[in-house]
Image 1 (spheres, one colour):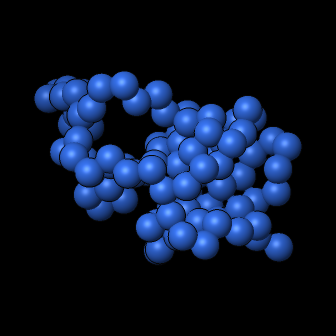
Image 2: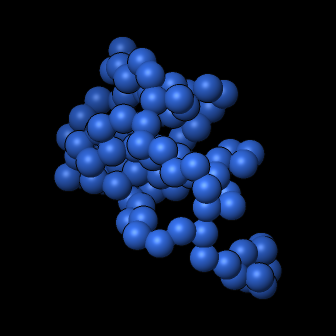
Length: 89
């Protein structure tokens, strides 16, 4: 939707996102078991990696990395293509 609330449009069905982050033409999102990305037009939904957590996840995308924090686990990062999931030390 537009910033003023006009032009509300459904992008995709069946997505239950805990957190989202929009960068360019991509929406990055998490649920309680994985990290995904989908184009803003609803195409190319891709599972990037498994990241199980029953806790609240906070997610930020910066350059080519997705940074993840939350209660109960240390900060992690993963490339926006799903590779190189690692703990940030």
